[in-house]
Length: 291
Image (cartoon, rainbow, N blue to C red; front, top):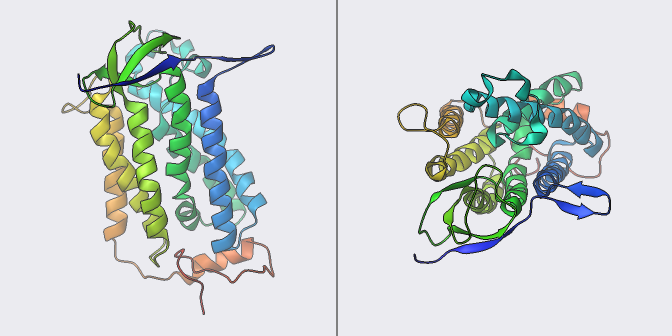
């Protein structure tokens, strides 16, 4: 054993009569932080009002919940096939981050179409918010001991020191396992400055979110080998196949020939935003202001 890190797990935080899950707190903080960054960037670069973006995010959060649960159920169908009544019991645990992201995007599309919000520029504006929200959200997973993986002697292995038992297993004091939520946090924290740096460059619409998806999914493919979920096809887990799909879609978009500037996208954003803003309109490619 080279070394390990450990802490006592806490499954609930008691505040008077309230019993709050650290997992839920982490998700809420991550969503709010990512949403705030999106709203700021969409206002400054695309001319949208922040209220418009937050209204859209309220629809997105419904999709996040539904998508996260459905993706988990599909990936763990054997656990639900004999009792379908378990499917809506999301409060008992069992959600998928990747499914939540997809569900949130799908749920936001109808609102965007109704209010003239083009989704690709918005996804570019949201790109840095994804790793920020993931990193903050994973803190809640660390507190409750969620997403623990296989036994390990790795330096960043998690040593169980007592407290609450993890949601999906029973550990003995001193057991050391992979903490895949920690790995995911580190991946997100590492790609955030990269995405912010890429965002400073002028590029075609959709390229920033494509790079973000490729970077994050590449890390997930590697770290998810440490998870305990049963592999599905060719030795890969469902989350890894989803990551491969993200990479294929992102790479296809990057390699697709397209003009570097899409004026119609800018016009949609400006028409839907506040008229007469103080800041100079930005190109739809999220690059430098037009001169």
